[in-house]
Length: 188
Image 1 (cartoon, one colour):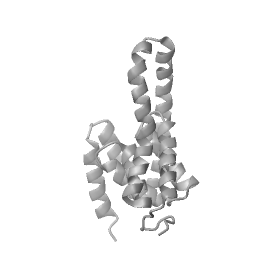
Image 2 (image 1 turned 45 degrees about the vertical axis):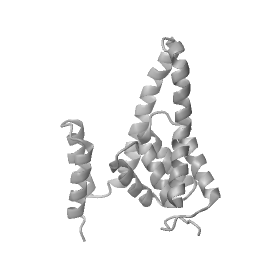
Image 3 (image 1 turned 180 degrees about the horizontal axis):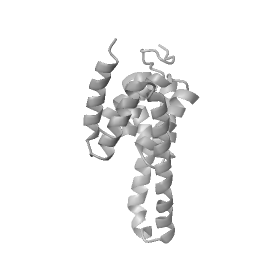
């Protein structure tokens, strides 16, 4: 079995498993800030570079991964890995996504107590915070540009975003209401 972009049959290729592991290891290892920051990098790797799937299929996986409980980066690794290579693909992509972070956390736990008061370390983290914000806004813009294609999408963003930010509505309710709205608005 082979996996071409968009096919429903996952492949059982050791080469693909290895590529999934390395892709998610690279993304997980060189991204500071978590799932939403990783999202544009995952999309670039999966859609543009590897051409494992189309952008629309990737956006569908983002919607599923974001609505599922847990960490977005892990949910995306599971979703992409499973879509491409079944259960084993989900496992190797997930291990790749978290492995580098796991090692870093172990090292930080061991060594940070010795350096936590260091002004350079503190300065580093103060410098990283705005960069993470920039990456999050970039991801939101890129996803929004692809997801909001018509009046219905604009209405959802115009109502949903203030509901989340100002009213403090829980994201699960926003997703649920958006799904119901979409089912009613986009019915054929």
